[in-house]
Length: 370
Ligand code: HEM
Image (tube, rainbow, N blue to C red):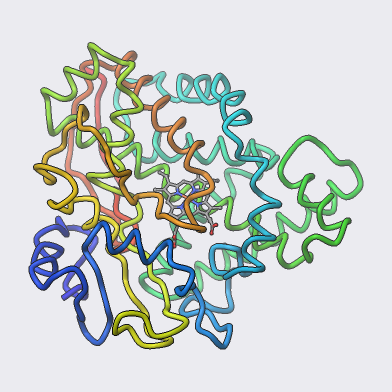
Protein backbone atom coordinates (compact mmCIF):
# COMPACT_ATOMS: atom_id res chain seq x y z
CA UNK A 1 0.00 0.00 0.00
CA UNK A 2 2.88 2.33 0.80
CA UNK A 3 4.02 2.16 -2.82
CA UNK A 4 0.81 4.03 -3.74
CA UNK A 5 2.14 7.10 -1.96
CA UNK A 6 3.49 9.96 -3.99
CA UNK A 7 5.01 13.18 -2.79
CA UNK A 8 1.94 15.13 -3.88
CA UNK A 9 -1.00 13.82 -2.02
CA UNK A 10 -2.10 13.69 1.58
CA UNK A 11 -0.63 10.38 2.82
CA UNK A 12 -2.97 10.08 5.81
CA UNK A 13 -5.83 8.19 4.09
CA UNK A 14 -3.29 5.46 3.26
CA UNK A 15 -1.83 5.54 6.77
CA UNK A 16 -5.37 5.17 8.16
CA UNK A 17 -6.03 2.14 5.94
CA UNK A 18 -2.85 0.59 7.31
CA UNK A 19 -3.83 1.52 10.87
CA UNK A 20 -7.07 -0.44 10.43
CA UNK A 21 -4.91 -3.61 10.22
CA UNK A 22 -3.69 -3.15 13.80
CA UNK A 23 -0.52 -1.83 15.41
CA UNK A 24 1.83 -4.15 13.49
CA UNK A 25 1.02 -5.21 9.96
CA UNK A 26 2.71 -6.51 6.84
CA UNK A 27 2.63 -4.64 3.55
CA UNK A 28 4.42 -6.08 0.54
CA UNK A 29 6.39 -8.43 2.76
CA UNK A 30 7.55 -5.57 5.00
CA UNK A 31 6.55 -5.08 8.63
CA UNK A 32 5.16 -1.70 9.45
CA UNK A 33 3.58 0.15 12.31
CA UNK A 34 1.34 3.20 12.55
CA UNK A 35 1.15 2.95 16.36
CA UNK A 36 2.83 5.59 18.50
CA UNK A 37 3.52 3.31 21.48
CA UNK A 38 4.84 0.48 19.30
CA UNK A 39 7.03 2.73 17.09
CA UNK A 40 8.42 4.38 20.22
CA UNK A 41 9.07 0.98 21.82
CA UNK A 42 10.90 -0.37 18.76
CA UNK A 43 13.02 2.80 18.44
CA UNK A 44 14.06 2.37 22.09
CA UNK A 45 14.57 -1.39 21.96
CA UNK A 46 18.25 -2.36 21.79
CA UNK A 47 17.32 -5.62 20.07
CA UNK A 48 16.71 -3.51 16.94
CA UNK A 49 19.40 -1.68 14.97
CA UNK A 50 19.86 0.22 11.72
CA UNK A 51 22.06 -2.47 10.16
CA UNK A 52 21.71 -6.18 9.47
CA UNK A 53 23.47 -8.49 11.89
CA UNK A 54 26.30 -9.00 9.37
CA UNK A 55 27.03 -5.24 9.59
CA UNK A 56 25.69 -4.26 6.15
CA UNK A 57 23.44 -1.23 5.76
CA UNK A 58 20.27 -1.39 3.65
CA UNK A 59 20.00 1.10 0.79
CA UNK A 60 21.92 4.09 -0.51
CA UNK A 61 25.26 2.32 -0.12
CA UNK A 62 28.44 3.51 -1.71
CA UNK A 63 27.79 7.17 -2.34
CA UNK A 64 27.65 9.11 0.89
CA UNK A 65 30.32 8.40 3.46
CA UNK A 66 28.73 6.44 6.27
CA UNK A 67 27.57 8.41 9.25
CA UNK A 68 26.48 7.54 12.77
CA UNK A 69 22.83 7.72 11.69
CA UNK A 70 23.60 4.51 9.78
CA UNK A 71 25.63 2.93 12.57
CA UNK A 72 24.77 0.75 15.55
CA UNK A 73 26.50 0.81 18.95
CA UNK A 74 29.28 0.79 19.95
CA UNK A 75 30.45 2.92 16.96
CA UNK A 76 27.26 4.99 17.06
CA UNK A 77 27.84 5.83 20.73
CA UNK A 78 31.45 6.87 20.13
CA UNK A 79 30.73 9.03 17.06
CA UNK A 80 27.59 10.67 18.38
CA UNK A 81 29.42 11.62 21.57
CA UNK A 82 32.04 13.53 19.55
CA UNK A 83 29.42 15.57 17.67
CA UNK A 84 27.14 16.21 20.64
CA UNK A 85 28.83 19.23 22.32
CA UNK A 86 28.25 21.39 19.20
CA UNK A 87 24.47 21.03 19.68
CA UNK A 88 24.13 21.61 23.43
CA UNK A 89 21.11 23.73 24.43
CA UNK A 90 23.50 26.41 25.76
CA UNK A 91 25.37 26.61 22.41
CA UNK A 92 22.09 26.78 20.50
CA UNK A 93 20.75 29.52 22.74
CA UNK A 94 23.88 31.60 22.16
CA UNK A 95 23.15 31.23 18.48
CA UNK A 96 19.60 32.58 18.55
CA UNK A 97 20.42 36.25 17.88
CA UNK A 98 22.37 35.31 14.76
CA UNK A 99 19.48 33.21 13.48
CA UNK A 100 17.07 36.11 14.13
CA UNK A 101 19.28 38.40 12.06
CA UNK A 102 19.42 35.96 9.15
CA UNK A 103 15.64 35.44 9.27
CA UNK A 104 15.05 39.18 9.30
CA UNK A 105 17.42 39.84 6.41
CA UNK A 106 15.57 37.25 4.29
CA UNK A 107 12.24 39.03 4.72
CA UNK A 108 13.02 42.33 3.01
CA UNK A 109 10.73 41.57 0.09
CA UNK A 110 7.09 41.71 -0.94
CA UNK A 111 6.45 38.84 -3.36
CA UNK A 112 8.55 35.76 -2.88
CA UNK A 113 8.72 32.00 -2.71
CA UNK A 114 8.40 30.96 0.92
CA UNK A 115 10.51 27.84 0.31
CA UNK A 116 13.34 28.93 -1.97
CA UNK A 117 13.62 32.50 -0.66
CA UNK A 118 13.09 31.92 3.07
CA UNK A 119 12.59 28.40 4.46
CA UNK A 120 15.60 26.94 2.60
CA UNK A 121 18.21 29.73 2.88
CA UNK A 122 17.67 30.07 6.65
CA UNK A 123 18.80 26.56 7.72
CA UNK A 124 21.46 26.47 5.00
CA UNK A 125 22.96 29.65 6.34
CA UNK A 126 22.69 28.47 9.96
CA UNK A 127 24.26 25.05 9.49
CA UNK A 128 26.99 26.45 7.24
CA UNK A 129 27.83 28.96 9.93
CA UNK A 130 27.84 26.30 12.60
CA UNK A 131 30.10 24.05 10.57
CA UNK A 132 32.32 26.98 9.60
CA UNK A 133 31.65 26.85 5.85
CA UNK A 134 32.31 30.19 4.12
CA UNK A 135 29.34 31.92 2.42
CA UNK A 136 30.98 31.68 -0.99
CA UNK A 137 30.97 27.88 -0.71
CA UNK A 138 27.46 27.67 0.73
CA UNK A 139 25.83 28.78 -2.52
CA UNK A 140 27.52 25.93 -4.37
CA UNK A 141 25.66 23.23 -2.50
CA UNK A 142 22.28 24.86 -1.96
CA UNK A 143 20.66 22.02 -3.92
CA UNK A 144 22.77 19.29 -2.41
CA UNK A 145 20.41 18.42 0.41
CA UNK A 146 17.47 18.20 -1.97
CA UNK A 147 19.43 15.87 -4.23
CA UNK A 148 20.44 13.64 -1.34
CA UNK A 149 16.87 13.53 -0.09
CA UNK A 150 15.63 12.64 -3.59
CA UNK A 151 18.13 9.79 -3.71
CA UNK A 152 16.32 8.13 -0.76
CA UNK A 153 13.37 7.64 -3.10
CA UNK A 154 14.87 7.41 -6.57
CA UNK A 155 18.33 5.98 -6.05
CA UNK A 156 21.51 7.77 -7.02
CA UNK A 157 21.48 9.90 -10.16
CA UNK A 158 24.46 11.34 -12.09
CA UNK A 159 23.47 14.81 -10.90
CA UNK A 160 23.50 13.56 -7.32
CA UNK A 161 26.89 11.86 -7.72
CA UNK A 162 28.33 15.07 -9.15
CA UNK A 163 26.98 17.23 -6.31
CA UNK A 164 28.29 14.69 -3.84
CA UNK A 165 31.83 14.86 -5.30
CA UNK A 166 31.76 18.63 -4.96
CA UNK A 167 30.69 18.54 -1.33
CA UNK A 168 33.30 15.94 -0.42
CA UNK A 169 35.99 18.05 -2.13
CA UNK A 170 34.81 21.11 -0.20
CA UNK A 171 35.00 19.28 3.13
CA UNK A 172 38.45 17.90 2.26
CA UNK A 173 39.62 21.45 1.64
CA UNK A 174 38.05 22.81 4.84
CA UNK A 175 39.45 19.94 6.92
CA UNK A 176 42.96 20.60 5.55
CA UNK A 177 42.61 24.30 6.44
CA UNK A 178 41.44 23.56 9.99
CA UNK A 179 44.31 21.14 10.51
CA UNK A 180 46.62 24.12 9.91
CA UNK A 181 44.53 26.85 11.55
CA UNK A 182 41.92 25.56 14.00
CA UNK A 183 38.92 27.79 14.74
CA UNK A 184 35.84 27.71 16.94
CA UNK A 185 33.63 25.59 14.69
CA UNK A 186 32.43 22.00 14.37
CA UNK A 187 34.99 21.06 11.70
CA UNK A 188 37.81 22.20 14.00
CA UNK A 189 36.45 20.17 16.92
CA UNK A 190 36.21 17.05 14.73
CA UNK A 191 39.74 17.61 13.42
CA UNK A 192 40.95 17.77 17.04
CA UNK A 193 39.09 14.51 17.85
CA UNK A 194 40.67 12.87 14.80
CA UNK A 195 44.13 13.95 15.98
CA UNK A 196 43.37 12.20 19.29
CA UNK A 197 42.36 9.11 17.28
CA UNK A 198 38.78 9.20 18.51
CA UNK A 199 37.52 8.85 14.94
CA UNK A 200 38.97 8.09 11.50
CA UNK A 201 39.21 10.58 8.62
CA UNK A 202 36.38 8.73 6.84
CA UNK A 203 34.17 8.86 9.93
CA UNK A 204 34.84 12.59 10.24
CA UNK A 205 33.70 13.14 6.65
CA UNK A 206 30.60 11.02 7.28
CA UNK A 207 29.74 13.10 10.33
CA UNK A 208 30.14 16.38 8.45
CA UNK A 209 27.99 15.28 5.52
CA UNK A 210 25.33 14.04 7.97
CA UNK A 211 25.24 17.34 9.84
CA UNK A 212 25.00 19.25 6.59
CA UNK A 213 22.21 17.17 5.07
CA UNK A 214 20.23 16.53 8.27
CA UNK A 215 20.31 20.26 8.95
CA UNK A 216 18.92 21.52 5.69
CA UNK A 217 16.50 19.09 4.23
CA UNK A 218 14.40 18.83 7.31
CA UNK A 219 14.24 22.31 8.81
CA UNK A 220 13.16 23.81 5.48
CA UNK A 221 10.08 21.60 5.60
CA UNK A 222 9.35 22.36 9.25
CA UNK A 223 9.16 26.04 8.31
CA UNK A 224 7.28 25.47 5.04
CA UNK A 225 4.80 22.93 6.46
CA UNK A 226 4.18 25.12 9.52
CA UNK A 227 3.42 28.30 7.57
CA UNK A 228 1.18 26.40 5.19
CA UNK A 229 -0.72 24.85 8.12
CA UNK A 230 -1.16 28.28 9.70
CA UNK A 231 -2.41 29.91 6.48
CA UNK A 232 -4.77 26.97 5.91
CA UNK A 233 -6.13 27.37 9.47
CA UNK A 234 -6.81 31.11 9.71
CA UNK A 235 -8.03 31.00 13.33
CA UNK A 236 -4.72 29.40 14.40
CA UNK A 237 -2.76 32.00 12.42
CA UNK A 238 -4.74 34.80 14.10
CA UNK A 239 -4.22 33.25 17.52
CA UNK A 240 -0.48 32.94 16.93
CA UNK A 241 -0.08 36.50 15.58
CA UNK A 242 -1.74 37.83 18.74
CA UNK A 243 0.34 35.53 21.00
CA UNK A 244 3.76 35.17 19.47
CA UNK A 245 5.11 33.46 22.57
CA UNK A 246 3.24 30.46 21.13
CA UNK A 247 6.01 30.02 18.52
CA UNK A 248 7.45 26.88 20.24
CA UNK A 249 3.91 25.42 20.42
CA UNK A 250 3.47 26.05 16.67
CA UNK A 251 6.75 24.23 16.09
CA UNK A 252 5.64 21.19 18.14
CA UNK A 253 2.22 20.98 16.50
CA UNK A 254 3.73 21.30 13.01
CA UNK A 255 6.20 18.53 13.82
CA UNK A 256 3.36 16.31 15.01
CA UNK A 257 0.83 17.15 12.30
CA UNK A 258 3.10 17.46 9.23
CA UNK A 259 6.50 15.99 10.11
CA UNK A 260 9.29 16.57 7.58
CA UNK A 261 10.57 13.00 8.07
CA UNK A 262 7.60 10.69 7.54
CA UNK A 263 9.18 7.34 8.28
CA UNK A 264 12.27 5.47 9.34
CA UNK A 265 13.09 1.80 9.77
CA UNK A 266 14.79 -0.64 12.08
CA UNK A 267 16.08 -4.19 11.71
CA UNK A 268 15.52 -6.89 14.32
CA UNK A 269 18.83 -8.31 15.53
CA UNK A 270 17.02 -11.27 17.06
CA UNK A 271 13.48 -12.60 16.86
CA UNK A 272 11.17 -10.13 18.65
CA UNK A 273 7.43 -10.86 19.05
CA UNK A 274 7.13 -12.56 15.67
CA UNK A 275 9.48 -10.21 13.79
CA UNK A 276 12.25 -12.45 12.55
CA UNK A 277 15.98 -11.86 12.88
CA UNK A 278 17.18 -9.45 10.16
CA UNK A 279 13.62 -8.50 9.20
CA UNK A 280 12.96 -4.80 8.73
CA UNK A 281 10.17 -2.78 10.33
CA UNK A 282 9.06 0.52 8.83
CA UNK A 283 8.01 3.00 11.49
CA UNK A 284 5.49 5.43 10.04
CA UNK A 285 6.36 8.39 12.26
CA UNK A 286 3.75 10.63 10.62
CA UNK A 287 1.02 8.06 11.25
CA UNK A 288 2.20 7.48 14.83
CA UNK A 289 1.95 11.24 15.34
CA UNK A 290 -1.78 10.98 14.57
CA UNK A 291 -2.42 7.85 16.60
CA UNK A 292 -5.94 8.39 18.00
CA UNK A 293 -5.06 6.27 21.04
CA UNK A 294 -2.50 8.90 22.00
CA UNK A 295 -3.75 12.23 20.68
CA UNK A 296 -7.43 13.23 20.91
CA UNK A 297 -8.77 14.53 17.57
CA UNK A 298 -5.43 13.53 16.12
CA UNK A 299 -6.11 14.92 12.63
CA UNK A 300 -6.84 18.40 13.97
CA UNK A 301 -4.07 21.01 13.72
CA UNK A 302 -4.24 22.70 17.12
CA UNK A 303 -1.32 24.73 18.39
CA UNK A 304 -2.76 24.73 21.92
CA UNK A 305 -2.66 20.93 22.10
CA UNK A 306 -0.77 19.32 24.98
CA UNK A 307 1.87 17.02 23.47
CA UNK A 308 1.99 14.13 25.87
CA UNK A 309 3.73 11.92 24.99
CA UNK A 310 6.12 13.72 22.65
CA UNK A 311 5.52 13.22 18.93
CA UNK A 312 8.00 11.06 17.01
CA UNK A 313 9.04 13.66 14.40
CA UNK A 314 12.57 13.57 15.84
CA UNK A 315 12.46 9.78 16.27
CA UNK A 316 13.19 8.25 19.67
CA UNK A 317 15.86 6.23 21.45
CA UNK A 318 19.56 6.42 20.68
CA UNK A 319 19.13 8.04 17.22
CA UNK A 320 16.86 10.82 18.54
CA UNK A 321 17.62 13.84 16.37
CA UNK A 322 20.82 15.48 17.54
CA UNK A 323 19.74 18.76 15.95
CA UNK A 324 16.32 18.89 17.63
CA UNK A 325 17.11 21.89 19.85
CA UNK A 326 18.56 23.77 16.90
CA UNK A 327 15.63 22.90 14.61
CA UNK A 328 13.10 23.94 17.25
CA UNK A 329 14.88 27.25 17.74
CA UNK A 330 15.12 27.92 13.98
CA UNK A 331 11.46 27.04 13.51
CA UNK A 332 10.33 29.31 16.34
CA UNK A 333 12.48 32.19 15.08
CA UNK A 334 11.14 31.75 11.53
CA UNK A 335 7.47 31.60 12.58
CA UNK A 336 7.82 34.63 14.85
CA UNK A 337 9.66 36.65 12.17
CA UNK A 338 6.89 35.96 9.66
CA UNK A 339 4.09 36.75 12.11
CA UNK A 340 5.75 40.02 13.09
CA UNK A 341 6.91 41.20 9.68
CA UNK A 342 4.17 39.79 7.47
CA UNK A 343 0.87 39.54 9.35
CA UNK A 344 -1.05 39.77 6.03
CA UNK A 345 0.97 36.96 4.40
CA UNK A 346 -1.02 35.12 1.73
CA UNK A 347 -0.52 32.46 -0.90
CA UNK A 348 -0.37 33.83 -4.45
CA UNK A 349 0.01 30.79 -6.68
CA UNK A 350 -0.03 27.01 -6.84
CA UNK A 351 2.13 24.97 -4.49
CA UNK A 352 4.60 22.46 -5.90
CA UNK A 353 5.21 19.47 -3.67
CA UNK A 354 8.42 17.58 -3.15
CA UNK A 355 8.43 14.28 -4.96
CA UNK A 356 9.37 12.25 -1.93
CA UNK A 357 7.64 9.78 0.32
CA UNK A 358 10.21 9.92 3.11
CA UNK A 359 10.62 13.70 3.29
CA UNK A 360 7.36 15.63 3.09
CA UNK A 361 7.28 19.23 2.12
CA UNK A 362 6.99 21.72 -0.68
CA UNK A 363 9.36 22.67 -3.43
CA UNK A 364 7.66 25.96 -4.10
CA UNK A 365 5.09 28.08 -2.20
CA UNK A 366 4.52 31.51 -3.77
CA UNK A 367 3.42 34.15 -1.27
CA UNK A 368 3.01 37.89 -0.89
CA UNK A 369 3.33 40.08 2.19
CA UNK A 370 0.01 41.84 1.46
C1 HEM B 1 12.70 19.89 11.81
C2 HEM B 1 13.90 19.52 11.55
C3 HEM B 1 14.41 18.13 11.77
C4 HEM B 1 13.74 16.94 11.78
C5 HEM B 1 12.25 16.70 11.58
C6 HEM B 1 14.72 15.89 12.02
C7 HEM B 1 14.42 14.56 12.12
C8 HEM B 1 15.32 13.56 12.45
C9 HEM B 1 14.98 12.18 12.63
C10 HEM B 1 13.59 11.58 12.43
C11 HEM B 1 16.13 11.52 12.97
C12 HEM B 1 16.30 10.06 13.33
C13 HEM B 1 16.08 9.07 12.23
C14 HEM B 1 16.05 7.67 12.76
O1 HEM B 1 15.82 7.43 13.96
O2 HEM B 1 16.23 6.76 11.96
C15 HEM B 1 17.19 12.51 13.00
C16 HEM B 1 18.49 12.21 13.30
C17 HEM B 1 19.49 13.16 13.24
N1 HEM B 1 19.34 14.52 13.02
FE1 HEM B 1 17.64 15.51 12.70
N2 HEM B 1 15.95 16.46 12.14
C18 HEM B 1 15.81 17.82 12.00
C19 HEM B 1 16.81 18.77 12.05
C20 HEM B 1 18.12 18.51 12.29
C21 HEM B 1 19.16 19.49 12.37
C22 HEM B 1 18.97 21.02 12.25
C23 HEM B 1 20.31 18.82 12.60
C24 HEM B 1 21.68 19.37 12.80
C25 HEM B 1 22.43 19.88 12.01
C26 HEM B 1 20.00 17.42 12.67
C27 HEM B 1 20.91 16.42 12.90
C28 HEM B 1 20.59 15.09 13.07
C29 HEM B 1 21.59 14.07 13.34
C30 HEM B 1 23.08 14.27 13.49
C31 HEM B 1 20.89 12.85 13.44
C32 HEM B 1 21.48 11.46 13.70
C33 HEM B 1 21.34 11.11 15.14
C34 HEM B 1 21.83 9.72 15.45
O3 HEM B 1 21.87 8.85 14.56
O4 HEM B 1 22.21 9.49 16.60
N3 HEM B 1 18.66 17.26 12.48
N4 HEM B 1 16.67 13.75 12.70
